Image (cartoon, rainbow, N blue to C red; front, side, top):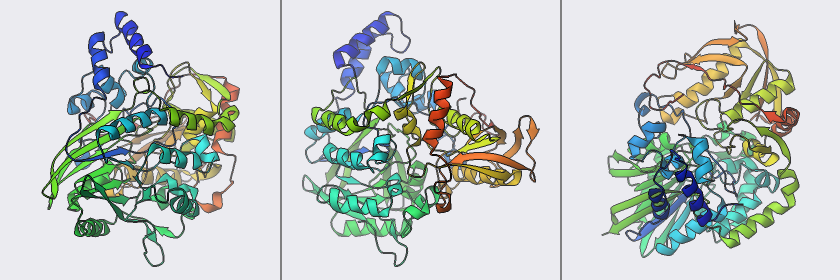
Length: 574
C-alpha cells in the first residue's frame, strides 16, 4: 500500500536526519514536494499528454537509461544525453526529486526514499487537478497503452480500455495496440470508444486502395479555439511486430500525407495544430523540420522523458517537440496562449507522477481492485528473490534482459540467446520478491513463443548488423525498431558510427571466435513470422520455471558489447 503524503514527508525527515546524501536539507525537500504539482494555468488552450504506459495500472519503479547513444547529428542532443549531463542540459539540481524522476543516478537509494511512480489512480488525481485548473483541457494518449501486463493480456486489453475511459482520455494513437489484431482494435474503436475517445492515425491505410483506416485528425473546440490533433501511429508496426496481426493495413512515416492533413486541418479553421505521435523522438525531430504548420508534436515510443521541448525550425516557422516518458510515470502539460488565430506563447511542464505525493483517486482505485481481483492468485505467485536491481532500459542488456537470456540458454540447452530490444518493463529493487506479475511486466505479448534455431555464424552477424542499423542509422527515418537485441552467451564489439554491415566485429563464444560457416544453437522468443506460432512454450513459462529453480537471483554481470568510437559521447555512462 502506498504511503500517504504525511507518511512520505516523515520518511524524508528521517532520511535527512540520517545525513542522506540525496537531499540533506529537509525543509528544501518538503518545499520541492509542495511545489512539484503547483502549476499555475497559462493561456487559453491546454493539452495533457501521457504515452507508453504499457498497461501499468499500479505504481511501479522504473529506472531511466544510462545508455542512450546518439550518432551523427543526433550525438549530444536530446534525448541522447544521460546522467549528470542530462541534469546540466535541463538545469535540474543533482539529488533532487526531479533528478530521480528523469535519470538513473543513485536509483536504488532514491527509489527507496521517494517511492514508486505512476499508477492510474494517482495519475487520475493529477489529471483531474490539471483539468480543474484548465477548463476545456484535453487528455491525449500516445499509445502503447493496452499492452505490457498480465491483466491486459488476459482480458484482451479490456482492462486498459475501461481504465482509459475512466481516466478521461480524449484522443489516442497506436502501436502495440495493433498486436491484439486489426479486428479487436476496430471493435474497441467502434464500440467501447464510440462518442468518447477518438483514435487518430493519418499514416495507417488499407493495403488495397490506400483508404484511411482511422481518422487522420480531429478538431476540438477549446474555449472557443479550434484545435486539431493529427495522429501518427508507429510507422514500422508490420516490421517490428507481426505482419499477420494487421495484414490489411499499411503504415509508414508519410511526410507528404502528414503535410496534407495539417493543411486540411488549417483549411477547416484550426488555429492550433498538434501531432499525437508514436514515431520516436528522433523521427519526430526530423518530421518537425520537414512538415510545416505543426505547433507541437507530442511524442512517444522511445520512452524519453524530456523536461523541456526541443524547438525545431522549419520553412513555415517553429515546432515544439516533446516526449513524455513511459509507464505512467509522467504527465505532460502544454499551455498555449492563442491570439489572433495563432499560438503567441506557450508553457510546458512534464510532471513526474509520484504516488506518495498524489492521493489515489477513489473511483479509479476501486476499478483497479475490481479488475485485478480475478487474477490475484496468478499475479502474486512468488517466484524468487532478487539480490540486485532488475531493470530494462537502454540500448543494450539490462539486468532483466540478462535474466531472460540466461533462462533461455538454460532451458533450451543453447549456446547463444537473443531477446528483443524491448524498452518496456518495470524495475525491481534489491531484495524484492519477483512475482509472476513482475515477470509478465517484461514478457506479456500476444506472440510469446520461444524458439531454438540452428544458425550459422554468418547469419548471427547478419542479425546483429540488421538490428544495429535499425538503432544507429544516422538517418532516423531508417530506425525501425526498439533498442539493440539483447544477447546471451555471445560477446562482440560494436561501432555505432560505422557504416551499415560494419558495426559488429570480434564475435566470441567462450573465448573462441564465431566462425561464419559453423552452426550454433540459438534460443529466442517473440518470433514475428506467422509460421512460428506455438513454436515453443511461452517465454513467461520458461523464465518462471527457471526462477522457481533459482529461488534467489544473484546479481550478475551484464553481457554488454565492447563499444568503439563512443568515448566522450554524452549518451553513455557505463
